Image 1 (spheres, rainbow, N blue to C red):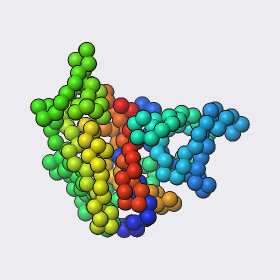
Image 2 (image 1 turned 90 degrees about the vertical axis):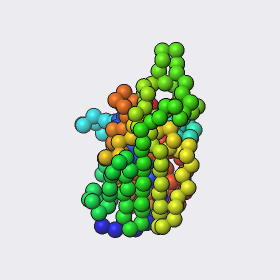
Image 3 (image 1 turned 135 degrees about the horizontal axis):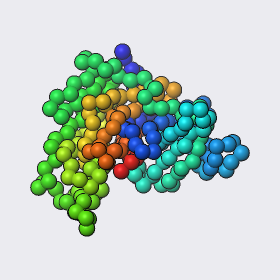
Image 4 (image 1 turned 180 degrees about the vertical axis):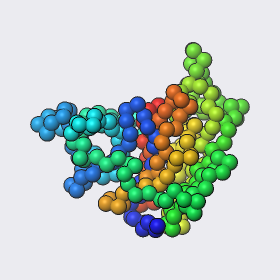
Length: 237
């Protein structure tokens, strides 16, 4: 199955978190208001635009979803927590995706490659070598930073696996992804990774469920536009 490369591209990797799953908006207006309560009469406290990614949760029979967006983990500004109507969100897993076949993906020795006619994604992990890094521990002996950054996925324990490479080509062109966008990522679960597409807006997403060492479950989204890296979204660490 061939996917046409669209002009705006978002690439995400995400997992389940305590706050819920990841979603995007499903609104023909291109934005959805976030409200302080479960009613259209409550105060508007913010909005999500096409391409924004956020965590959500809701009860089966509830018409409103609780949404959460933490910009401190996405290099953005303005933490947001409120409610949107459930019909205005689209869970990531409902999008079209690259077929999960041997022709489109390989995973061997910590190296994953997923591809179609337009996109090639390569993620590589390797065992964490503590002696190659600068570790700082808190007063209780838990790892607080690695190489000056809070580790995503370790939850204070010594990491076992580290993401060591993140490469992407779109239409044959290599995308420049800065090391700071991925070199603090630990315990990623590559087995369930896939690439999803939003045909309405042209956004594209990388989805990895349940990455953690157990206690450090997290969701992470790497976001691109027009073949360029924009920012990332991290939830749950």
